[in-house]
Length: 573
Image 1 (tube, rainbow, N blue to C red):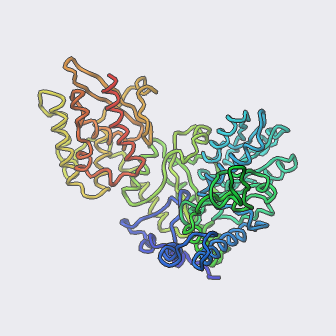
Image 2: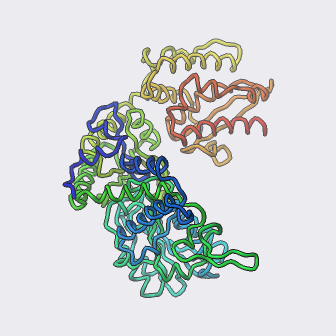
Image 3: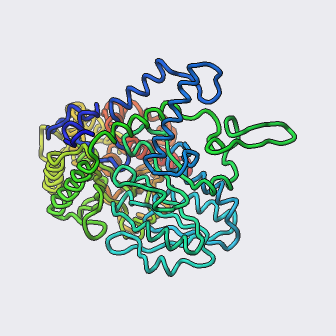
């Protein structure tokens, strides 16, 4: 076992190996709750499989297949040991936490839930631990009951006790929230359910890389997690289920591997775990995940945990000192997941500013819309750390957040920076005979400005400055009918047509970055007829600006959603 040192641990990850300091040009990756980085050993294992050992498992009558099968099943044993499961047959490979939950919902749920039965979840569940149960409940007539939270974001155990009844058939609960970062008292939750004969499923996606998990001690019926949140490959998950529970469940999918005998007169199913593993599995990911576990376990995990706890405490302390920062819940998180808002600023603007300084965080609802509604926020910023993150990176985060607050005040001042936004102050004075001509001239200025802005930092600053050009809509116009679907944050669009059948557009968003992008987009369509709107080559325009390659997929899709909404409004008008 190796003594834990953050520099040595970090050096295993090629994407991070050259970013061990606080350089402003280096990637500062703080989105580990979404997915962790991958080790060189894991990447090499996957490459080696395809280059030297590629064969299907369980089915080949040749040595290459036999060797691959042995390695594949050794990985299952590795996970059994990790969880202290009683049998390797209790370890089912899936595509991820989401599929693991869907498997239980569609197999166990269909076989066991009936009209009037109750399923208990909490307000802080990930969508993956809500929607599958809603779908099954709707089909069989079951009822969803929701546990309230305490001020610190953990489950209210008094309320939980009150929800338990003879009608309760299933309790689904997260071990650690992907938003709040607090450890729930799952031992008590499981014990109370078990005394009443209630089945339990624990979502361990955020817990598996931070806390020890012993399923025999917990005595939960199901425990689910994903490989990619603990340094392993994407597209792979684990469903742990008690042997007797899994044996009683019908298959989830039909196909190869999950059968013993198939005929048109009837089919018999395979034994565990293969009954739930239809088709060719993700062999390379399984082998890569085994290597990730091996590499992770070679470090002194007690020392690693001490370091993670120190980093969590340091991050919480430093973030707490940021002006206008508001935590979603009370008290320090138990693991490195920090969710907050900055008063007076949209979370998307904060995240995009950090991104322009090469700091990767998450903004939005984090697949936890019911929790956002419960906490009365539209979304938040989430910073999530791992054992390879450093205090220097946290210091850099704090520095850039402080800079954001300072510069955001400057965005509200007159736009006089000739080096970054040349001639923008003259746009209101453009003399032209039509809105279309004014917009065309403004587009030329915008393209020139963005051409001069070579870096994403400079382009981002332009977008934030340009946002001032988009006049805010009155609240009475920011309604459901004018809402644009597909934007990362709420955005509204209004269209008007003059006597010459030419269209003008006004829009708004709570996020300044979206307002800037909307203004830029609307320039291409102002004052045009229906046929002219349809004919606009918006792709070439965006390419000239050099925007899409810098935007996240969700924000890029939001930009395209604005374009699509413009066309819809014109066609319906």
